[in-house]
Image 1 (cartoon, rainbow, N blue to C red):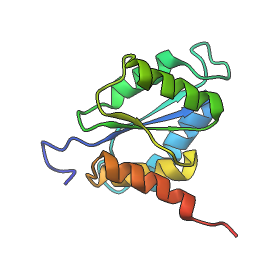
Image 2: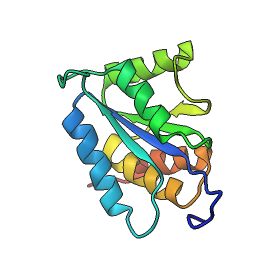
Image 3: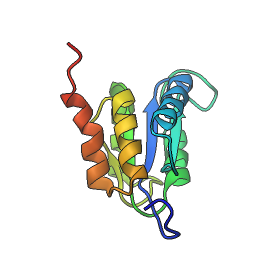
Image 4: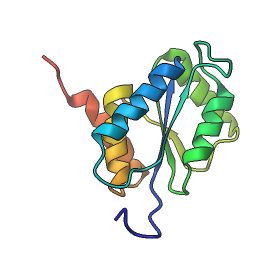
Length: 139
């Protein structure tokens, strides 16, 4: 499906309090999901000046960058990142239509979401793939 000229994958945004963490998770997900064309993924971590925190501006910009018209799945790390994304969604602030906060662990969910989106899954299936990471027990 990724070879189709009309392929419009779900975009993925990773929101962390740290720009380094968001970029590293995006790079890891891209590396693990490799083997073909990948859905767009963007990191929106930290503040615009490089500090720790979350930025509505960075999140909105990342969502616009990955939007291909099929929706945008936003995965987040900690509390205020959740609140920032929820506020953006509630206000309709500069987020593409079809942007959704996905309840999933950031690292494992990012891999599942990227694999699903790259395979052509719709937004509901991408969200389910990310959330399935909660089912995987490590002990």
